[in-house]
Image (cartoon, rainbow, N blue to C red; front, top):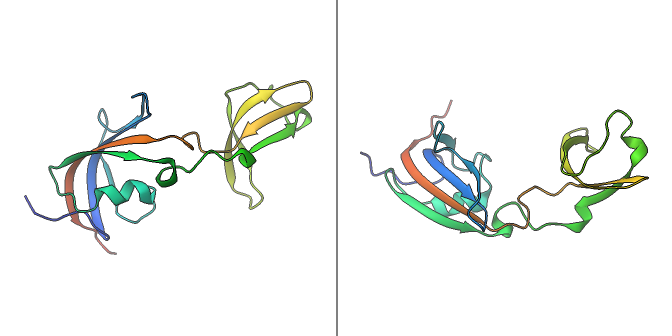
Length: 148
């Protein structure tokens, strides 16, 4: 077993479980393949990478991730009211996650939060925005990333 520790430029293989404040599991690799990523590659928000630094294979930890270090605070400006006429093909329903085109031509997911006669309210915040999350990890392997 090597004594390599997690840092920039290292490839990490781990199991993780992400939980809400009440213990509800949002995401987990426990029943699946472990996750493998390179630290700093953008797969994990920096707030999730930071507490992993210095850990070695075989170590486990549980970290509280505040909204500022996770998916940001819930921003009321990211809730938009759209005309119901914009939804000609589908019947908008509260709780439905839809994909919208953003001004740059990319895809932007939004959750329908309210529907009335004329308008549809869509929340474009990340579903985990404003949540404090518990990030439990079990580090399986740490090795230098292969540069191509």
